[in-house]
Length: 400
Image (cartoon, rainbow, N blue to C red):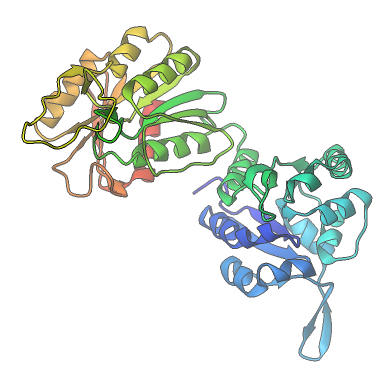
């Protein structure tokens, strides 16, 4: 069961380039257990095909007031469609469609359904930055808000025109987050702030080389996504990684070294409720960083190291109201080392995984974890995806 199991979502698609994202949106809604029907404007068919959307939604896609059944015209009942849905999401909502909605015009099936809808309506605008900023569009969006519609924010970045700025339709996963939040406003972490560290740190030797490790950041990013879906405001502090996240309630801080990560943690630590230290922070860094690349020579260079700041120890010492969770990746004496770290760092819980377990550890899509509580009680989980592991971890945190 998920929050969207059995929910009826009506997706309205108007004729903008962002319509190419809607097949992925339909697929995500179906994955979350929703039943999806699609209504689109005739212009939308220039950007995405009804066949694609009907295949994914497993429902006919409607775009006109009538359809032809053999030789007889059949009325596509916009009244019944508007009454069917638990939520009507219009994405993308172009400038033309927004104007028609705001002024009650009804020259296509999507608009007729909108004017007939009995359910909450979410609007995801999509247009170029100057169009979005134009007073007429801003007025239309304000008008639609006063009607009780929920106007979602736009994204910022590269636009179809080649310009950069505000106007992008939110990504499918972002839209899913807003829908999930609507159907369950009392999520278990709603109102909580969660700080998560992820990925490796790189400690510079010279401008080219560094001390680092094989951490991919996948586990930390999966934890951030899970925390966000449970209602939390998330601060994700990540070392160098190829992982990406774009969710409305996740703030991402990119850092390189342990000291940079430490500075961000210090600035946020007192404001958060839950901390999960999933980053693989380097234990040592060079005493001196060479200003120029160290050239290869017959004389092997000696690099003197000094310890990096122990971020987890700092958080354990400074802990007041926070629930502090650590990670232990071990190659030997796994349980003994994890218990010792739990005690020494003053943690409320620790997640243990082992490089000796096939499918666990760095880089892969799966992990095999055990969660050990401060009272020494522990629970082990079978090999799962890192996303599934993330939810298991939050189940344990919520039970503490």
